[in-house]
Length: 355
Image 1 (cartoon, one colour):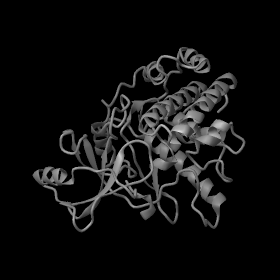
Image 2 (tube, rainbow, N blue to C red; image 1 turned 60 degrees about the vertical axis):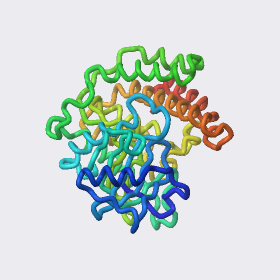
Image 3 (cartoon, one colour; image 1 turned 90 degrees about the vertical axis):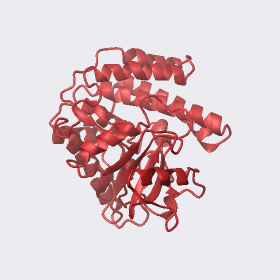
Image 4 (cartoon, rainbow, N blue to C red; image 1 turned 90 degrees about the horizontal axis):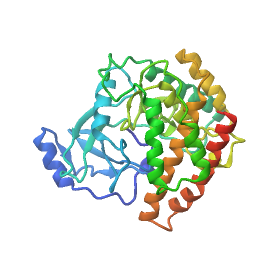
């Protein structure tokens, strides 16, 4: 994992019991350096807490779940350690995982130590001052597709992850499980437009063409990029990694992919800078992936609607958490406006089967 610049560290980091961590690591044969380079928390993101720490004379990232309850299946440090341990020797963009601690008593939650890779992270804008921004956007499009194709081309057996998750019936199971999450997130009162999406997702899902290792949250800000070339250096945030239909990962990527003339929901989402000149349209990304992977995308509409439905639920969950933590905060107001707009867009895509 990496961070792009000093500005990416929080001014007021979360407090962890660093002496307890020091003692735990010493018992495991590792040395935490607290004096010469104190730990610093990375800024950005709405999920796990990430800290830059020095262990055994090398920079590492300490990852742990956020405080309070977390959604089922998310923020899973044990899963992330397992996925990275399998992928690292075969998939160069997977950082090396040094250690996993399941004992929440050490620092208040299970945690992970991962190799630090220096680079830059792009969120809703390209870096200022690029000499050729359109060429950079074209290159980022290619790299996103190639990275996803390369991950999905891996044989789970070859990377020792053949028993990760339950790939059989996964797509239908995700539709059911996320419906349960939606009921909880909306306190049993889902908006009528979202109920329409849920009912549509009750139809049989397309049969998977392949079982692949999935990232499950594949988007631009989970790629660490070389600061000069913007080529990928690492793919991070594997806590939801699993086995399943690779088109689910593609649908997740496209659920964040904004176009210049998009629905207001996508413009407000602000997750990736893909509305900028040079980035491909979603339909073109779909065809690039199909050409690279050899998979058919003729039945992609189900995956597309499911990914948008999941996005609605995620932001509704974030809204509920933000409303408790900071009722008048900027995130609360933003999510409160974003969720109904995303529901409207999901219903629009369902009606028109647009990508």
